[in-house]
Image (cartoon, rainbow, N blue to C red; front, side, top):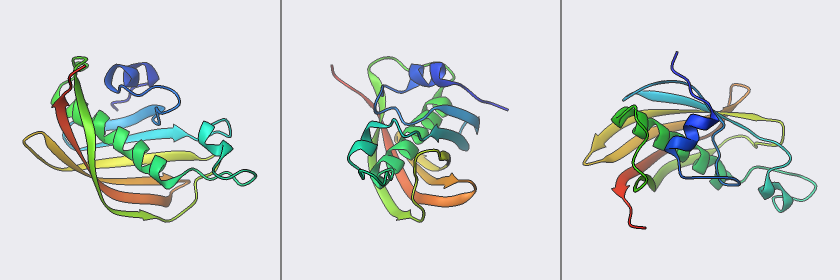
Length: 150
């Protein structure tokens, strides 16, 4: 089983609190698929306004969590070494997004992303997010590997 914890995630993704939305990678096969988790707590800053008294994780943040998982799979598929500081996978498109279940404090969001194809460092994925085995969201996501200028 290939897994890695938050310390290794921080070596690959540029995101930090409050925008890092992947807590752990449970398993993956480079070039194929990755399963990651986000433990959703009442302390998430977005719950202050979405919605007061009835907290629900915004759908766009579920998409972002899945997109961060695609970036991790792309990095691990390209190399087992952390990327240089000036290289990122940028989230560039979302298609066929569907939301099936609310995600609330106390839920564990389990994300599975599968690589569909790569062309010229454009990576297309099928992504699902589940809570207790129930589908919460699904989408096709695309990211692009790019050198960034600081």
